[in-house]
Length: 183
Image 1: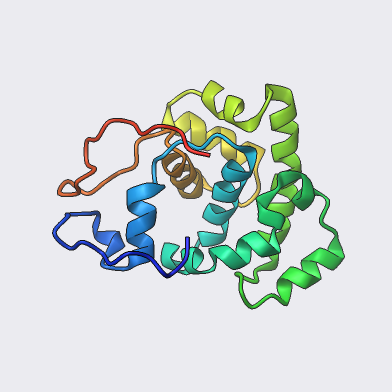
Image 2 (image 1 turned 90 degrees about the horizontal axis):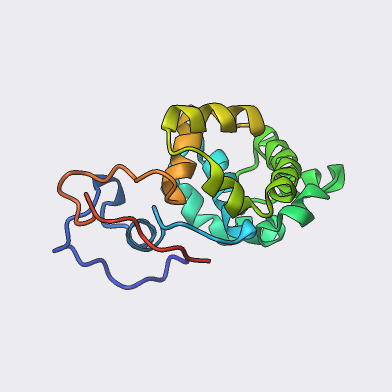
């Protein structure tokens, strides 16, 4: 996703958080709540949600290309192998959020992600096996991953379609059927 998107159709009611920002609208309309099927897509969403803590989602989306470059296109295997040298490289990368705790958590989360993937035949299978109960999902993720509080976990599960996203009542997607998986 880049800042160069089609003009926003303002005649379509959306969630208020999108405003008229083309990148937020594109994410809302095409990604938010759409189940993903690849490990890299799951790991990207998990990581970006953690980096977003305390910041706006707009900031994260506008830095997404730099995040993908900095974190090896969110390959969990590659990120799990990052060293202190990589941490220093990331801390000097102005294109991403340079927060040591979030960077270290992302690397540790990649390692845990790989374990869960191996134990379950893939991360999508792991996610699919989890109950659809929000409180249980929050508890599980808080124990499994670093920098994963209840709100971040909820946002992740909404983003990948495990639980329905909370659309504004007037949004064209409010009450819509679950969306199909994408890679």
